[in-house]
Amino acid sequence: MTPGGFLAEIVRAARREVGAPGYLDSVGPPAGRSRVSLRAAVERDRARGALVVEFKRLSPGRPDPRLPERPIPEFVGATEAAGVSGYSCLATRARFEGSPSDVRQLAMATARPVLFKDFVVEPVQIDAAERAGASAVLLIARLATEAHLEHPLPELAAYAHDRGLEVLLEFHRSTELSAASEVAADMYGVNVRDLDTLAIERATAFETLRTARERGLAPLLGLSGVEGPVEARAFWRAGVDGILVGSAVARSKTPDRFLKSIFRPEAGGRA
Image 1 (cartoon, rainbow, N blue to C red):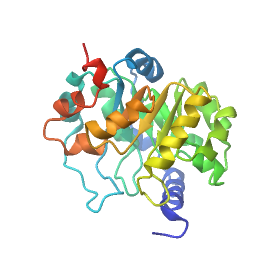
Image 2 (tube, rainbow, N blue to C red; image 1 turned 90 degrees about the vertical axis):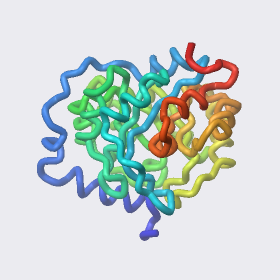
Image 3 (cartoon, rainbow, N blue to C red; image 1 turned 120 degrees about the vertical axis):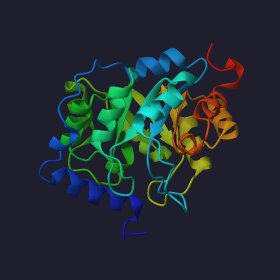
C-alpha cells in the first residue's frame, strides 16, 4: 500500500486528473437529460428495499480486480428489468478505469437516476457530474475528517445543490458522522469497506449504521460488500432503506436474477 493508504493515493491521483487541461471537455457536451431524484427513488422503493446498481470495470479490493466486460447499454438492459431504483457509475480513472464520460453514457442509456461516484475533491468534478447528466454526487466524510480536502464538505454540497444535484454523504466509522450536522446532504450511506486498507469491516460499519439510524439520518444506504442474499439481509436487518451493489452484479451471468434475490425478503421482490 502506498504512503497514507489507498485513500491518500486516490486523492493524489484525482487532483492530478481533474487539474489536467481538458478534464471537463472529456465528458462531452451536456447530456441534456431530464434530471430525476435519486432520493425520491430510494424513498419510493424503501418498503421492498431500494437497489442502486453500480457500473464498474475494476474492484481494487480484490486479488483479481478485473471485472467481466459488459458494455454500458448491455449492462442497463441486463439490470433494469429487475426493478432497480437507480444506478451508480465510477468516474475515477486511477485504480478503477472509470470516467465522467462513462457516467454520461450510463445516464443517456436509462431514465433512472444516476449517481456520479468519484473521490470528489474539487468543484470541477461536480461540474462534470452536471454535464454528464447525473442526478447526484457522492461526497465522502472521511476526506474531511482526515484533512484531505481544500474545499470544505459543506461548500462542495452547496455547490452541488446550486447545480441541481443531490448529495449522498458517505461514512465508514461512527466518528465520521459528525459531518452530518454540517453538510446539507440528501441521502446518507455507510460503506462496509475501509477506504485506506480496502478491507471489509462489517462490525465497524454496522455500528455506524446503528448510530446513524439513532440520529435519524435518512434515507440511509448500505454500500458495498454485498455478494448475495446473506449480506443483503444483514443490511436490511440493520434498517437501511436501500443497498448499493456493484462487483457481484458485474460478475453475475444473470444480473436480473441476482438482483431479484437480494430485495428485502419480506417484500418478495418488486410487485
